[in-house]
Amino acid sequence: MARLAAVAELSGRVLDLLLPPRCLACGVEVVRPGALCPACWDEVSFIAPPYCALCGYPFEFDPGPDALCAACLREPPAFDRARAVMRYDARGRALVLGFKHGDRTEGAPSYAAWLARAGAALLADAELLAPVPLHWRRQFARRYNQAALLAGALARHSGVPLVPDLLRRRRATPSQGHLSAAARARNVAGAFAVDPARAAGLKGRRVLLIDDVLTTGATAAACAAALRRAGAAGVDVLVLARVVRAQG
Image 1: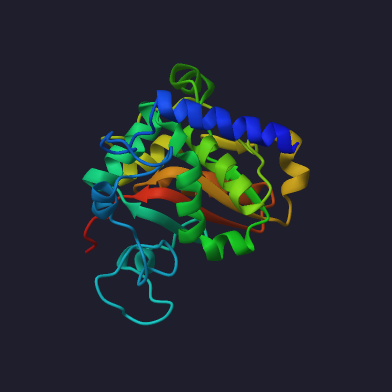
Image 2: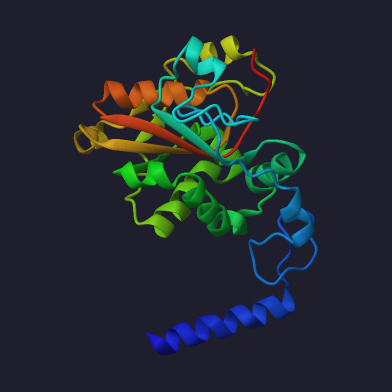
């Protein structure tokens, strides 16, 4: 085993000489794969407390412990808690889209470490990790599910068991990109179901749902509803980035 590890390390060094690792954001040379250069690191808007105790919406000032944002006061989400690593702003969007559509999948281990920090409390309670699934046609076209890559890397980082096929996408849904919050909710209503072969292992357990972006929470809510119907004791959500809009 030691010899195999040494060979793997040597192979990695040779590969780095031939194809130097590049910053996930701007492409300049960095010291290791999956890293950001210092300039791009400074541009990432990491989300830290204070934030909403339920959905993780970041506050501009600290309103005190267990405070809720305006949206959660009006209507609590279908999931228990949500947390995100960073804002989905210009830099966050570039990182997510590079990972999602640009084959920058070497970032998964670094993103898993970021997720573990942002979602430490959620991981402490989690009994299962599950990615938000893609419909098979979209996954075939994209070649991979970015949420599944994040969930797999986070499982290896945290030790929390991963059930990659816990949820199924029962029907293809149009892109959510330009839909209103209400239209997003209608678009994904009933779109997810727990795989019947996995239902018995789900009952009474807490699930941590993994996705790349949280926008209105419609997809997370639809997944949480499906998990609860199948007997999950609780559902938390952990994402790489979230859209942060001013709340009324």
